[in-house]
Image 1: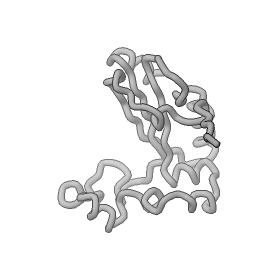
Image 2 (image 1 turned 90 degrees about the horizontal axis):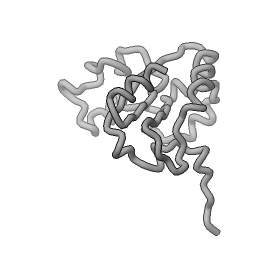
Image 3 (image 1 turned 60 degrees about the vertical axis):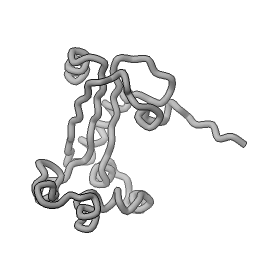
Length: 140
């Protein structure tokens, strides 16, 4: 029996690339209180581009870190089901070495989310077909 995916419940980024959307802006965020994280998600969720057939000039997606999922109120028992790479992050010593993040690329030198920086909760990804549309979309 074939599995039927609910495309309206999947972010479009998982279903397609945005070849025609050559302009992008990625915004990191931290919301140190669960209520703030929940309010941000509630505001963003209707704007997220889903995996259904698409022809718009912008697309918006959101990604959370393990810290961000905790801020949303997800229990550790659920987060434990994610991969070790996701839970431990990119700055774990052996992973950094494996990925080649050494020398100038060492996580201790990162501008954000390095081991000596405050953690981030997530990332908002906006894609657009023109720079003007990107700026307009980002200011919403």
